[in-house]
Image 1 (cartoon, rainbow, N blue to C red):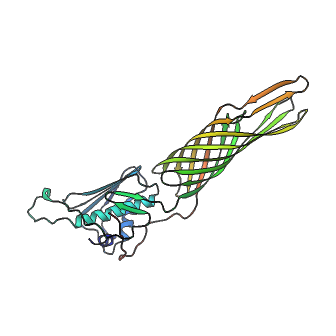
Image 2: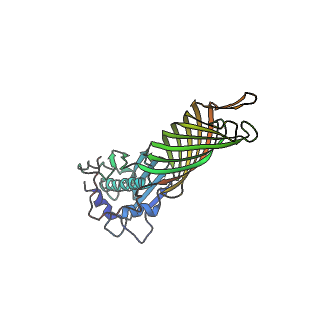
Image 3: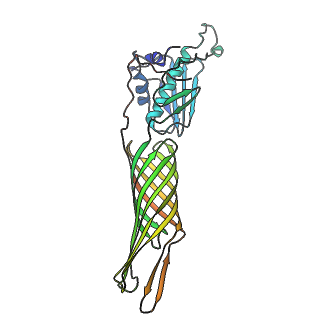
Length: 339
């Protein structure tokens, strides 16, 4: 069997509307983009006149169906496709090329033979060669090995209640390293609050929590939207400083907790995303703040609750090079794959 590049020699720019139809609720595939991806490998001036192509992408599935004339269609369905749109478009283009190759190898029929008698023969296995970078095709399944993880910077701000004895304003700065099915998150976070009327009318308490957070997330992507569940551990010092009191004092104590996070992100562009995050925080080491009135020896204490909640809005910036547009290949380029 000839190489896929030979079959793709048919698929080039035509003045007539192309045969590709894009369906589904995903946003990664467009008719123009998919046609350009396939046509970039071609060397002729027209699509085959009797070919019809349907590419349907929704969530984590991709289905490609190619029909020539009145014959039986060749359909390939892929489960668990990658999140990157360039990879999805490449998978669809490869599937279209291989399906046209299968139909070209079909057993010809006589002019008087009913279409229902048409049988499509399976192509001979391709010679072993170097697959496209990151892609291995086995039977009807495609597995995409990410060339490298996506690295993003994340900045967040919001508020929390129950992480310390008082409600606090929250801020965080971190790094997110994401693969197709899992992401590693590391952040440095700060929560702070100033409380007045502590230890007398003029007394005040400045309280802050600085913590390092590390954990993993499991994302699910559908078009521009990504939902995720995360499990994180966090720890650091809590600093409490009494001011404008009879005996000003500063204390530093440890704070340790675990975080269950849900997040919802929308991609504004290939590089920028907005993320809404909701955290349920369970305190493992929970400090208590106490104030003593020296005149009366009266002690007032504020313990840290066992469970707290934090809500933040984040901006995520993807780092590194982002591929743009279809990959161009010369018309003589050979594309091999394992079957």
